[in-house]
Image 1 (cartoon, one colour):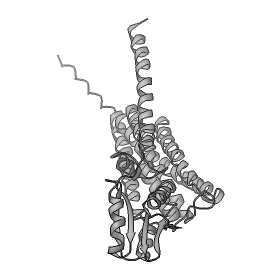
Image 2 (cartoon, helix red, strand yellow):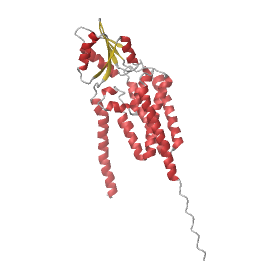
Image 3 (tube, rainbow, N blue to C red):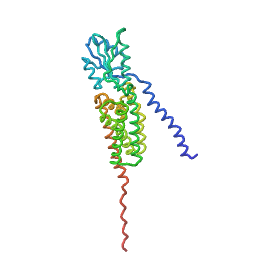
Image 4 (cartoon, rainbow, N blue to C red):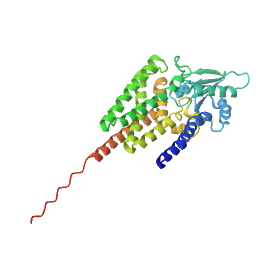
Length: 329
């Protein structure tokens, strides 16, 4: 066997197991280590009544980030603004738990178990779902499953632009057009058909399209600057890391540190959080994830334009040298 073929054979034998191990680490490790980490929850009521509850909650070291509110209405407003995932309201009649299953069905269930366990024996805890999941997606499974198709659509657009050799403005136009149509198609299916989203239709389509555009422009921009290795780097960031680190199926605060934070700085996680905000919370908490999507989009499109200029400049032929006149003899 020639030396080149031998090296390629060994490369395949080594790289495939490495890729499998990396994929298992990225997907299985966060799922196996799911637990609350600085999960923001609220406590409302008189200080003398809430103090014992706060002590019991803070006994779980690093599990909860406690926000104090003066009244039940203030706690409800914080939940609707996506400041906290839920709140415990202490009244003379007992404790009431306010949840928002639309923010995360997993967190809503976790809070229900934690607060019920902390309640005194024989004292039932009333549970109120302030922002429930829609009837078309009561477990939030459809929204959680929507992230991976967005990642695939964005990655496919970035790869297609690169493979078809589109450059500069044509590449940017193709990316924007594909993302816009993908957003419209996604909102039509998830909202109009499945009923899994219940917010403003155009806002949902905009978030879906912006997520696809952020991912696609990132891949195309990396490919324009680095060539084929750029596509591999983009796929690693968006597919292998961005998708499992997004926290859409549970919550970023339930993932191991710093995976949850990193996931929100990548388009899949930011797109999932923004979509949840516009679909169920009237845009509450959407500012930060939209900013992340915008930064990735601007950086990716700028790289596409810069890379196209670099390629065009490299293709300009140098002027031919003028022939040296023969000496007159």
